[in-house]
Amino acid sequence: MDIGGFLVMLIAFTGAAVTVIWVISQSIMRLKRMDAASGANQLTPEEIDAIRAWLTEQDHGDARIAELEERLDFMERVLGRAREAQQLENPSEKP
Image (cartoon, rainbow, N blue to C red):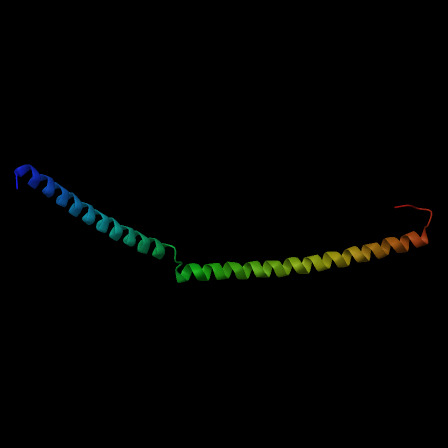
């Protein structure tokens, strides 16, 4: 075997070994990043409790809004009846 052939084989094997090692190291780094990213997206118990408290407040607000809507509907009906009664008493006046 001549020196030129030996160098070509040495460079080819070295290049292949470096490529395999590089691919393995990149895969390990990618797995570490995925593990770190999945842990970062999880909420702490304090954050979950804060979200639950906020949702409870929203539910109470929704209940208050529903109650106010019912009261508004009632008042609209009362005013409508009062206007009808007034029109029956004074048919010449137009609203």
